[in-house]
Structure formats: C-alpha cells, structure tokens
Amino acid sequence: MKKAKLILNDKEYEFPIIEGSESEKAIDITSLRNSTGHITLDPGYGNTGSCISDITFIDGEEGILRYRGYPIESLSKNALFSDVAYLLIYGKLNEDASDNITRDDFKKLIRKNANIHEDMKRFFDGFPLSAHPMAILSSMVTALSGFSPDPDATNLNSIDQNIAKLLARVKTIAAYSYRKSHGLPFIYPDINLSYVDNFLHMMFSDSQEEYHKNPIMTDALNLLLILHADHEQNCSTSTVRMAGSSHANLYATISSGISALWGPRHGGANQAVIEMLQMISNDGGDYKKYIDLAKDKTSDFRLMGFGHRVYKNYDPRASVIKKAAEKVLDALKLDDPLLDIARNLEEIALNDDYFVNRKLYPNVDFYSGIIYRAMGIPTNMFTVMFALGRLPGWLAHWREMILDPKSRINRPRQIYTGNTLKG
View (cartoon, rainbow, N blue to C red):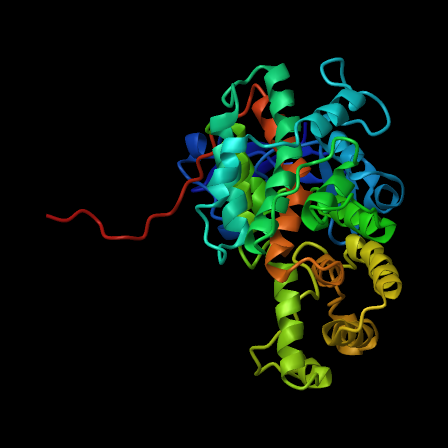
C-alpha cells in the first residue's frame, strides 16, 4: 500500500493512500489526531473526503457525471426517472438489484403509496397563502414520520419500504403545496399514471376533468429530474449524511437536506436566474448592459447561471438540457420577454471570448429555470422541483451510510480562537 509521509517537529508519520475506481486519490488521516495531536483545517471541506461511496462519479476538469457508472448523457436519453431512482438507490438499471426489492416491486410501491394520510391535509391549512413551498415541503416531510408505523426501523425491509413511500409521497406534498398557494383544490394521485405524469396531474389538472397528458411537458420534466437526481457530496447530500449519521429517522434526515437545498447558493440558483432576467427586463431589456457589467471588475453584478464550482469545463448536464430547452420553447411557442433575454445572454456567453476563456458557460441552473418557467411552474416552486429530483440521490446516500457497519456519527473538529480562561 502506498503511504504519505508527514514530518512534524522532526518526527515522521505515515498515512495510507486510498485510490478510488476512477483513480481519485486520498490520504487517509483517520489516525492523524491520535498520533500527532493535530487536525486538518479545510473551511468548506473543498479538499476533504467525508466518505467512501460507489453511487456517483464526477470529474469537474473533464466535465463527467456518471450515476453508478452510467454517463448522464445516456441516462437522459433512454431512462425514466423512476428507473434512475432505482439505479441510484440499489445499483442496477435494467435488472433487479436484490431479492429484497425488485425493480417492479419498487415501482409498484411508489404507485400504491402516493396518497398522504387525510389528517395531514389539515396541516396545509395552518400555512398562510404566502408561505414558501419549501417551508411547507420540509415541514410536511418531517410530519410524515408521525404517520409512519416504523419511522426509526433499521432492518432492511423497513428501510426499503420507507424509501419507496417517501419517494411516492414527496411529489404529492410538492403538488399540494403548489395548489395550496394558489387556492386550488387538491387532486388525488392516479395509480395508473407514471411518476412524472402523476405529479403533473396533481399540479395542473382541472378537478372537473380527466388528466390530459402533454408529451412535451412529460419528457422535459423527466429529463430535469434525472439531471438533478444526484451530484455526489454537495451541500444538501452532505447534510443528509450528517443528520443521518445520528440515526435520526429517514423523514427528519431528508427534511434536513430539503432545508439545506433551500439556500440561494445551492438549490435556489435556478430561481436566481429568473430573478436576474426579470431585473434586466424591468431595466428595459438591455442585456448588453449587463454583459458589460459582468465583465467590469469594479461591478458587483454577476450573471447567474453561468459557470460552476465543480465543473471547470462545460457542465455535462447543461449540454443535455440546452437541447431540451430549445425543444420546449419551440413547441410551446411562448411570447415571453424573459425567455428572449435568456436566449440573447446564452448566445453571447457561448461566443464571447471573455466568457469562453474563463469557461463561464451556461450551467444546468440557467436552463432549468427557463424550462420550468415555460412549463408554467412559478418561480418559488423551482427549488421544490430541485428537491423532487434530488430525492433519489439523498435516499441512496442515506441508505449506503445507514447500512455501512463502519459508519460513525459525524463530528468535525474546529480551531478555537476565542478567549482563554477567565476569572
């Protein structure tokens, strides 16, 4: 085994080097504090591996994203969101992962368990019409634990049952939060519809008519959910692992991830894109003015939805979603000034040397906000849509962690800089 050497106060220490299946390397410092009395300091954990996982691989320099080895480009073309959810959680795409829960059983459980308890519907009445849908979603997911017969169970069968039920019910809660904010009656889920169509049915159906499927909407939403399904150890996924490491029940754990996602630096990015476009529109639609501001080092303005912290190349999800955005906008033939501004910004950013040289390409948040707006989903629901997509990833990481016999409660250290002993 390869080792790394640390020389500290003229004393030499060795630490093993771990190599992943894609040649990623890490220095295992598990014994660092015990052997040296020192800890590492890494604000934001940008250089810290918090776990070993076999779910998702990202190479930011090469623009690669793979779920369980499958490139995001191929999954976005050929898979259904429910199949991708099974892949992330159980490791297989087109076959059964285990005898405990087959792919068909998993899908049946999701279809059968989409209804929430009738008493929970009264909870929605406690929220004002102005309540943010993310506040409703996080609160209602936590409340689900009170309506589950075994929310704290850690046996494999109960874990898998609760995972499927949560996947089924979160989309119902999300749709109900939308209808609550618009003063509309709740629409019951339809067991005969696919995951995506069932959600669209509960969101947009007229209570007096049958659901009429729109293939453009279905395909676009299926794609968006797949693209957002997992992204390795991002802020919300790390939060899920952190909360879950205390053995908080699944519902409370996922609610913590929803709360982390709510932040504008994370899941709120696509909402920020639309708000930026609205600001430009209110200023006469002069997008070139804002391009110049983005280039001006003395200006605080920056273009939302361009560049990415992880991807130093083109965001692979953006290259997929760009084509979908064009298809949706062309099919729906919308006359929306914000979408026109977005297309103009995109054209400049893809061809202007300033943005190209700095690799400030439009990212997945830029295009997802545009598509959601075109679909008629209000801006304050964008982060809820993100949560709906990211849920399988959260569940996969939670299940991987909870079933790992070596997992420990997460407990980072700190460097104290406050007052010394007084009095």
